[in-house]
Image 1 (tube, rainbow, N blue to C red):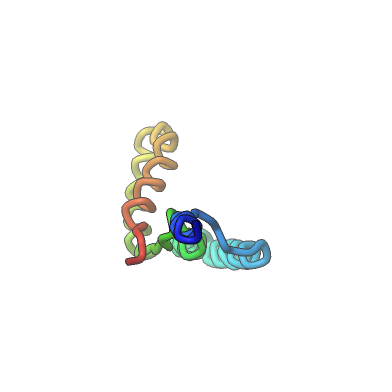
Image 2 (image 1 turned 60 degrees about the vertical axis):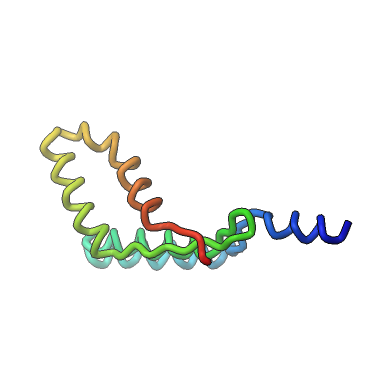
Length: 110
């Protein structure tokens, strides 16, 4: 019976981040974005998402994030250009594009 409990615990999924940590990271992200007139928005996104991922455990395995702000910045410029060219239509797909980029750079710690 004890072995079943251990195996069940190892497969547990949870988030262990705290409210005040989250508020702090988001405030820093907002201040950096405002202070740089939006230029460092990709850096703020990566910083906040990295914090969220580091505090996430799925089936007993902690997640990691290896995305870099400079990579996101290049994509962000491309997505912004596509949004302007399509008169805002691409903005409907922007959330999906960002989610795909985040997922591509998220993995299990081994």
